[in-house]
Length: 371
Ligand SMILES: Cc1ncc(COP(=O)(O)O)c(C=O)c1O
Image 1 (cartoon, helix red, strand yellow):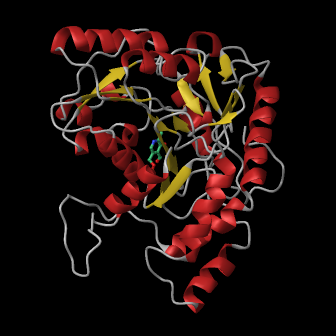
Image 2 (image 1 turned 90 degrees about the vertical axis):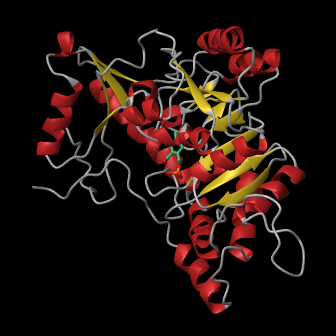
Image 3 (image 1 turned 120 degrees about the horizontal axis):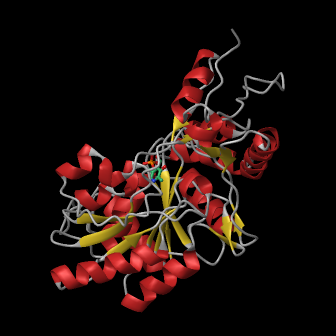
């Protein structure tokens, strides 16, 4: 049996340890320091559009602090994409608000602008209030239909907290994902395109928002010569050690993205003649996914196997793959936080015939495909 092939392993570029050593040598082993500052600058240069970026302990923390600054609180509703990872919506519950789920559309697998508008109008009619924020996601790296989503958001004056956790380097109409919303979140979790071993960042439009983010991320400590707090704060800043890893990873980010796109192209070519299997593609020229994970849908009636049959076959070969996210409105944990079940029934995200294709890991250098 060959070495296990993982879905998405962290890959170091080689210079990470030098940045960490520098932190040790200069005794910056704390949640601030030169690596944090430099990592933020690197990210700002990468995202562009004069955004201000604050490095945090996780992508979830970034969404939390973004929603907090959009004024989300108890009694509010936030429109979330149902077809996503739980961390897109959990911060809504942290703030005592309720998620309102909308289904995805078939082209991008992301929030349907049409269902978004229906959900907004539905909530206004039923509660008398518009939702407080919208959380679209660029799932598996595929950009959401941001022009249309942005137009609906602007029409009703609702700000966007953009979840770009999986989409660093993805572009929509030539703009980087994460730069579209009032706030954008990135994740540097161990399974992401680049990692800081665990971490995230909040992309802000203004320096003032960035300062406020740092304030809340450092226990909301007031600028006084003694410890004094007027607000509830969080311990969410990224450590200078983790940011050292991030600086090293920024040097290899372009290479990582190119590699994931090449893996996607490889699978697309190899699977194109298999009936009942469809590999997710950019739906048009304006979309440029980083293809963080290569995904496909399986029609068992045509293919003769379910997605899970294929997953188990791969597992028997020591290859990791996963079924796609289970939609949020179908999950028990979200029923417990009393989500408002207004997911629009296109049925897209309730198809359970989709799965994530395994990628070749660094350890599998033979060039042999895992199928
Ligand atoms: C879509 C999505 N949103 C949010 C997150 C949260 O990021 P983190 O794990 O860094 O908290 C993740 C990843 O884990 C994710 O995939």
